[in-house]
Length: 240
Image (tube, rainbow, N blue to C red; front, side):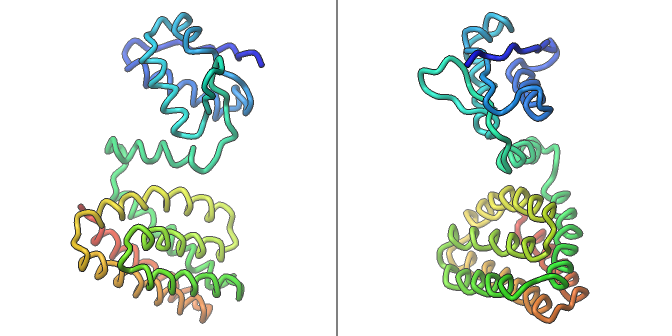
């Protein structure tokens, strides 16, 4: 497989590795570089862009961490991958870490987004959806003293809600945001004692149960209100 020719013109006002990463990512997300295409080797990119090997490697490492490319030891160049949800998460994580998006903004968005999803779930849920959500809550109750497991089940509950909404955009957005906020909850848990972690987990479970009750009763208004209460509480509880 021959490497694809790149058309990258670096901006001298930008950090080189950031500029290379951003331009390669744009070529991938625009479809100019397609899954299976091979990038030039590090040596070829060094010659073409007149940049050092560490600079090229840093850009390629970020692309690989984001799921855009994969590198095989001994191969002549990284290969473009099919875009996944992971590729959508990484830019948002980067923006939060760089304070371009605040956790307050993210929570404000989820107050409205998740409330609508809960209302849809109340209207559209199936018996299978209800059974899955009940099981998730029961497992989370058992995992109160295992905060890593509890975090996974907290995200799972919101994913199941999105599935019950029968809206594919809601499912995708919820998964992306859930995996980003998973780190926020983990970082908060690490600041707490074991007893405090359990207390926080119980508060989360209490609101999950209220949301589920509204969905069981197919009360979209109550589900919307319960979810807003839940996300508002999360905004307060997860402050570091």
